[in-house]
Length: 547
Image (tube, rainbow, N blue to C red; front, side, top):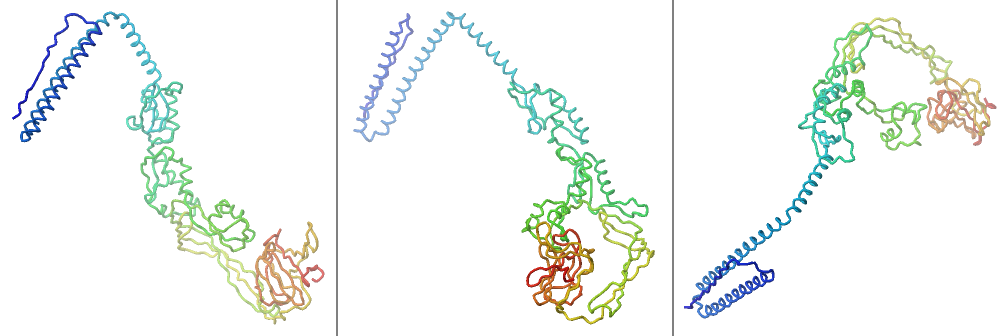
């Protein structure tokens, strides 16, 4: 078995009896470090020797490794103990030297420390002087104040002022609604209490306790208080209620389930009474269809419907400024409708017309197919007591309770012709299509040829065929409006323009004097009249020379 020799050297270091110079101290420390390093190398050499011996005695490997570990631990402990002792000695010496220096420079140190303390106090004072508080309402910064109390002490006044101005119950919670943040306010405006009050007063994001008018659970309008909400509903009712003494109401109420409830909202959402009435009266939209009438233009239709041209185009894809409108065309639009439906049941006396009947008589004086009104009918009048059910003023149901005839109706008499119809072809002669004088003759005017004559007459006056023939065109024709062209043969045609109604169609044969249209003012026209032209061999001639 290998023998282990453990060498341990302990050197007692005694305190120096007398101070040494810095160079001597450095040499002593260097010598000690060299000596420790030599001891460490010597220990490593011994370990190597032992490892060689262990390698020769392999069956003692485990025991040798453990022994080497213990030896290494002892060496490390020795070194650590020396290092700790040496450090404590050096710390003690440094502390002693520092104490000597402090005693020697006491006055200077006190002076410099005093300057630093005063400078620190000055910096803290300046920072405190320039630091104020930014105050916010529900996260929204409003301004800067010197002290938090500048805001907190007037919150009650702010709440009272807002409640008085808007009529709503407005409460500001200082713990949940108001927050402060320290800020450096140098060069910034500092709010006084009056400015703070103004900032809150003109802020629309404040939460307000108001009242909502609801219909079937949907909020229609929010107003300041319950009294104003009731006044709004009363105003809506007054719009549709009659002031006539002859009307007796059995029921007045809304079709919808209308309630008034407390409601929390932003102050900007609270409406005035007038605005709430207007919103409920016309805040809805409903689709409608507009029928074009004679004389309509796009801009005129927009004025009638209360929409812009771009809005009308949006509701009618394909519509442009160049679109030609014809009477009877349909355009889609929208109309305003109320958000509430007022239902009334009333007992009322109403004056109502009584329709007349029509009697037919025959006469050989007129051609077959012609009908002439011999006597115009007139409506009668009756006084009726009825129970009327209205929705927003419009009658939706009626029950007649009593009826009294005041004026009896007069029947209309229409005479139908029985005289045989003449041949439906051209005769070569012409009659005037409207038996009136010429108010605008053939020829040049305003630098252009007026290719016919104008026969002025009231709208609806009968226009007759100037001669027999075949209708080659009947319809709308640009500036001529509703127009008819009749082919009489022998390269002869007649034109009838600006009609309000057409009684014949293309391909139909007509005889001279037959009613073909009615006087109107369609197309480019300055008033109701019949524009009459005669064309021979494709060229216009002066009709006054032929009729």
